[in-house]
Image 1 (cartoon, helix red, strand yellow):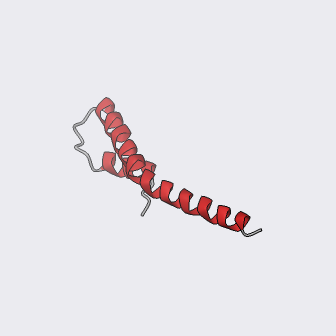
Image 2 (tube, rainbow, N blue to C red):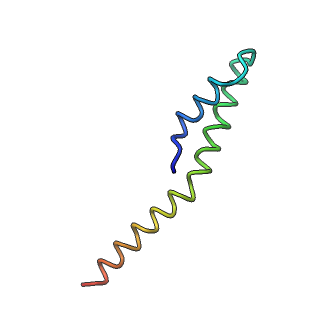
Image 3 (tube, one colour):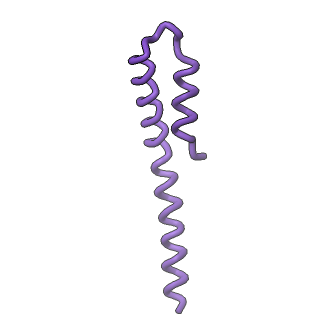
Amino acid sequence: MIVDPEKFALAVVQSSDSSLTVADKLGLFEEAYQAAVTRNQPIVDAKNKKKADSVKAFLNSY
């Protein structure tokens, strides 16, 4: 399952300690966003490879 990085980061910030500073919350947002992007990358890569392989197979059939 691919996680929407923006929604995930917003949820992390919204559930964080209310005493955090704006700078801390921004850092938390950036870390959470990047964590989601990093987690999603293998899934995205696999989907792209599958599509590329499908196109190659189609083109090789002619």
